[in-house]
Length: 169
Image 1: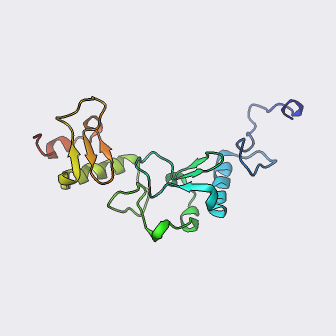
Image 2: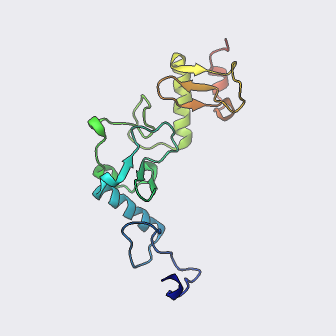
Image 3: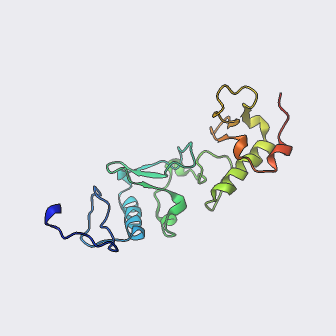
């Protein structure tokens, strides 16, 4: 089939992503394609892995299609998606970063999220492992939350953190 099709022009949009189960005949823009994935999630939640409550890494996708591997993040979802999403198991509300003890109602930017973790470390040092003095690998995190597994490195800490940290033991 590919050899029989006319070549795409440089400024022409590409059709929907290959391997997607519901292909369309008209070329679609990236936002249109993304909306189609969100619609599919709403209409066919059983075809998607819901990772919202099990995420250990903020960069991990919130949803992943079981067949195609297509991924979706809540931080880039259309405004209509939130009210249409399937509920979490046990009707449990979770923040954007799953397992984090303090819920947030709006998605936060990465710097805001990071600042919240550093604030929690300063306010609740007993909830974090302090690995600064016992690191065997320079790439290992300096702090790790005991419950959620969230990790922090001093090299990426905000400027105010150093003066607020508990002293090394």
